[in-house]
Length: 195
Image (cartoon, rainbow, N blue to C red; front, side):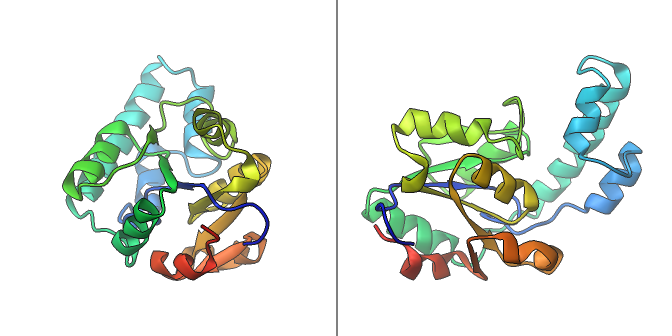
């Protein structure tokens, strides 16, 4: 990472800070949404419609079950401690719910200056949440990086003008070449940072 010093990192949650535990195939079958972006399809039904409310309740149940198995990703603690020592701003932008996000924060005693869950509209892959955080931090896109594990994270980062680091998993092999950086563990990001 060359150029401006990295002053802020925005993390995804599932598959990035915590190990992936949601069975998305089963979730899609349970909601009846077999194609398209889950949140976009539900939003198209109208937020207050019974169909949307039922689908969101199903998703919330999958998220609750996954939260019971929650584990920090390898290298997460080392990276976050390093960033704290070097006074790098840290935030989380997730498409998960607030309850699960706050559970992660409290269970592992983590600190982030900004937390955004799926109630922020529009969610990733739109860049709005990332741009909101940059504004809160008074930082430019080239001073920050997005760290995630999905296409949503990369698209949002690039739309916001930020670099994106992808955490390698079997499910994201097909689009790793679109990321600016790819690491297998979060602490592997430390030598790449210009802080």
